[in-house]
Image (cartoon, rainbow, N blue to C red; front, side, top):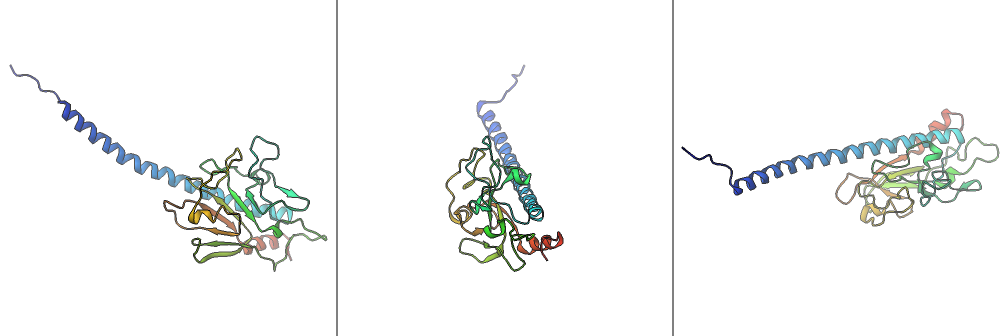
Length: 226
């Protein structure tokens, strides 16, 4: 009679190591696919917000003001425009999701930063149908990097998701995630310069903006501008 031979401990260890390696190779592409899906979803959300902003302008004759970024979504007034009298309290904050009827957060559960050219968000005066004229332009610029060339200029308003790392974004609690650096810092430093480029380890922001030409053509079509 012959004895049946089983696996030795060494052979079992090797088999388990091979299985772990194969599983690891499968997990990496899956994580990459999940990340890309969230990027695509967030870009669609940002584009929808831009369309909502244009619809708001056609209805009210002006662009919406930002919402206060530090107001938790459990507090009264969260997601509403922050205005003082007939003008915006500040040109930059977060997307006023309640006023626009859009989602509060991106695919990572964080609020969209929103900046507007202040004069384009003032209330119309003197019986005018719009707060601005055909000759008026925005004061926001998008660059290829912090020290790069201009991609777009004279932008009326801009929407920014701070991507997977969330650096610079405000959470639904009103607390900001600190730590943005390099090109991402341009998207959180509260000025009119922003950066948009291909994603890399140090940059994963997602942007969309309101072109002044598109804004004016919509306003003319709606009879808001001559």
